[in-house]
Length: 294
Image (cartoon, rainbow, N blue to C red; front, side):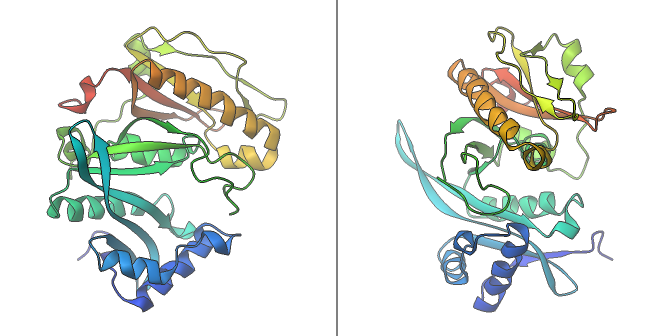
């Protein structure tokens, strides 16, 4: 008997890719132009890419797709897998389906002999940060400004499309431990504070209870730094668009400064609170956590 209500399998046909089109319209409503078309997905699947779908009783409820790419390194171009989209039907969010799709992608890409997967996501979306960094074990030291230009879908419209580009080293011990069947020991905020982590700034809340960024942050000095972001950025954006813009430009400065100084995003912590929760990125100086560290 299956432990989960879904089945994940490779997608290849035009009919299957049309279902992916339809699911995109549900996940990212409001802009037909930003839908990845079925004919492109078919081409990806038939030319070395990976398109995976999750089904519950023959209904597509999630998908992930990517394709082979090249990255320019000092030793010349090296192959990688570029993961472009992960979408989960709203009724199946917070079910573990996103993690399951990425784990299936990890298995397929390893079979292709590739060791590196990259993708982008909005660094202010705490749910995505928790999945990508804390659960999957990706790391990040690349901040891309307005990488997709002006986006028109309902989730992204109106703000610069700044993104983290994360690195997922699929054969590293770090990633293998996080994707093993044994759950990873969860590290809370107290663990990092007890390790003398530097809190770069203190936040306050507006009279309406929304998290407000400070005007400045402290110089980065410690081995580990904590960077707070709103726990529900999309709700904040809907309630106060100007405040959302403030967060975009403030966090841009924080992360660009940290990455220039050699820090690496290595973990993400969510702590429940009376206000609904607090979310922190964990930044580590150097790359010591890429090997044996969990």
